[in-house]
Amino acid sequence: MVTRREVIDDLRRQIERLGGTYGSRKFLPFGVLALDRHLPGRGLTLGALHEVVEHGPAAEFAGSATFFTAGIAARLKGPVLWCLTRRDLFAPGLMKVSLHPDRVIYAETNRDADVLPLIEEGLHQKGLGAVIGEVSRLGLTTSRRLQVAAEASGVPALVIRRWWTVAQKDLTKLPTAASTRWRVSPVPSEVVPAGGLKRGRWQVELVRCRGAEPRSWILEACNAQGRLALPADLANRQDQAQVR
Image 1: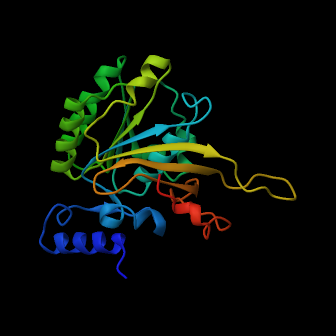
Image 2 (image 1 turned 180 degrees about the horizontal axis):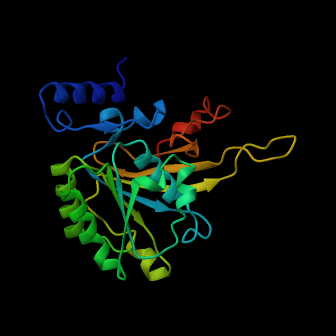
């Protein structure tokens, strides 16, 4: 019996052959089969706007969303424009996910509202691998402009939603025109009997995606090549690919 997923995948392949919505776009696979198979195009759409939000305790100070985003940028070719308002981005930490500081161009402003024009301007430039911005507020109109600019350039716009107050956090829940919205939170890693630290783990939630349903996965954090992985002890669990 043909499943709903197989029917949808077949329709997508037909659209691709016709040069439709997904036919002219490029994608970056995560290298995790369960995740890639769920996404339209079997990977992250490059010429598109994507949001990443930190979740969990003390999320305003945590760095899972930042490393998740840096891991994506690290696997793309070319310089990365990183637009921000605070000097709390630890460049040596980015090297742990393969994003060398020499590849990063920092664009710092004093106001959150100035970051979005920087992202858009970056998307109009040639030669960049990705444009990353850290903002609290991202409205529908602005996000549509970024989505259009990303589509025209073929460069992904990766927006990390940050906040320091409850009011700013509420802004991250408002709708935008982004192609995907990801929510990343740290979870306990595997317990090792002899002590020591194992590779970190994240709960990676696809909160919204054009052409796919919300879903979440427990994944190992980005490694030194910027790649995620499916934990071996969780790979066969039925709830690993649970539909939210």
